[in-house]
Length: 437
Image 1 (tube, helix red, strand yellow):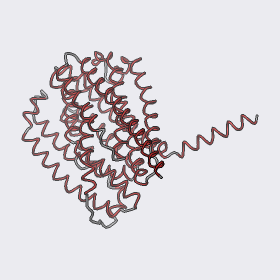
Image 2 (cartoon, helix red, strand yellow):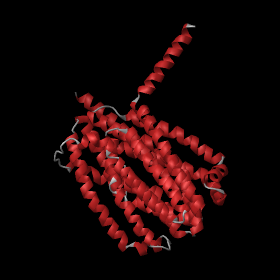
Image 3 (cartoon, helix red, strand yellow):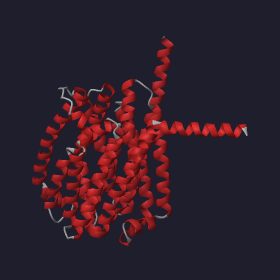
Image 4 (tube, helix red, strand yellow):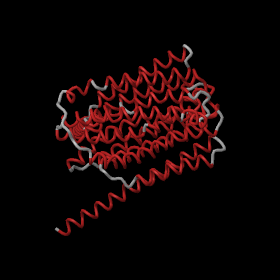
């Protein structure tokens, strides 16, 4: 009886400890928001996959992949801003954060307009490469890129300040507007143009809404600051995010170039199915990054946050991969429809690749948050390897999936070895330091 009471008390203590764990608490908040957002985004892709058909959906998916690749500079800026905001949170320096917000918005408004002009000038050759019959779609994509150069600034501040509820709500607003508006515009006959217009208007709505939770920053008078550290930090961040984005976007672009419209549409659907695992677990990396950055700034231990993140993502991802291997036809029928069943045998393998990508994302976020940058060479090598494999070995969609799987498996192994090697070196240095004392 006493043993049972002690066991019950111990369980309650552990449960309370888990509830108080900031990674678990914030992770659950962001995970809940991410799941709602992912659901909205996947309703968008699944509905349009059915409504547009493989050919037009392949065009839309390739344009979205191009937009992700071209907006990598802003992914870099968002990561840098998360770091700045995290440091400002520690020092409560919101005047500096106001100056950062205003300055970055001015700079990247002009940068976005420059990209719009460049896309207009290169619309026809880019359309030919992607086998898109209407080059006006490329110019239309430019307006989306303009907004993609602005919204990461406000979202980066929200993430750095660990305002995960507000950030999740902002993503949810974007997903709801995009999905409902896209379905309506496609139904009334605008097809790919309607889908792109819906994404543009949804991004604009989310950008405007993102200022509401930042009122307390805007009310503080801006204090001029220098960005020397941020500039030095931005270069390795850019390269890491650039090569990382290539790993899960360039395959769609190359398949659109090398394969028929029908095959490209099938592969795009397969890619979106697999990425459910990646985006469903992506919230853990987003939560972990500012928390590790804050502990690193304070000189506190942070390795446990990485281990917890890897365990959570690994467990959730394994369940997803198993489901894709056991019920691939069911998943595809429910989500995309019978016209996409040709890729059912590959669903589990692509899901496994996306699990590897999710774990890679955790490791990259961790290393960036503690200013450890040598891992970039591994990510760059993997990105280039994947592109070369697809360029030289693309006789079937199955071969492309294996190219992606091989590249990501090799990168995950390299990053894990890199982490453990750094842990070993760190312990040896600490031992030598203590021995000298």
